[in-house]
Length: 79
Image (cartoon, rainbow, N blue to C red; front, top):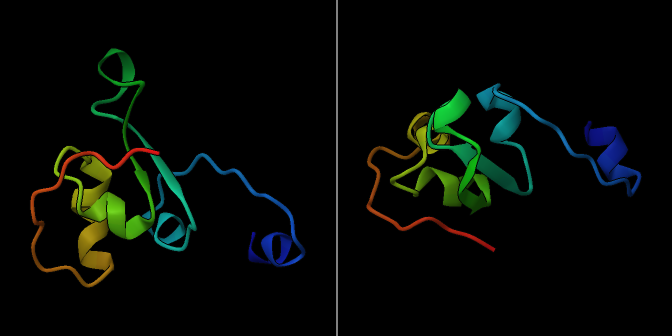
């Protein structure tokens, strides 16, 4: 993926692996739940933005991988 990006390509990935998500330039987090309880944009932004978004389940688990110890309250970050 990084090689494709480095060559100037745009790469869109649907991913649940946090190690992949934390390296993204931009994340669109859908939820808040799966299935019928999901499908809405919960947050968009850098992995750090997602980690700071209270409503994001992804952010809750992504934060510690980014070195965050706490989750300050933040509204959804949307573009």
